Length: 142
Image (cartoon, rainbow, N blue to C red):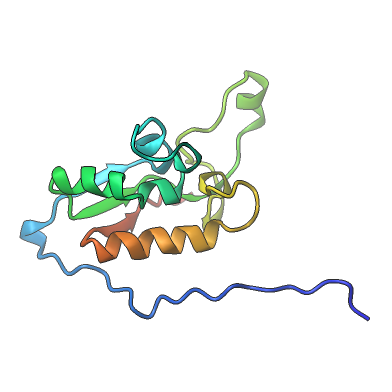
């Protein structure tokens, strides 16, 4: 008799559409998921620094006030904190040391280390798209 069951919640992305803003009207804003919402007073504290925080109505309102039509997210792939940094009491803030390309970084999830980062990332993208804001990823090859 099995003691465990592996489940994968289904995400309904069928209604998600990338905004088709013409290039001559596109305003791209490069943003760090954690840094953008970390101190935003209108984003709930438990969502600051997370994918959910970036999709929060207050964050979206700010982006739309600036006229932003697309975000370019600084690295959101799962990355590590180098041992040299940790020995110095530092962390890899920018995320340019990916260990798993296209795996959403777990520390940017409002659920912490629970494994819900993929669902939260997808919901963030879907919410931003619904608001007319495209989402692009910064990727640096090794």
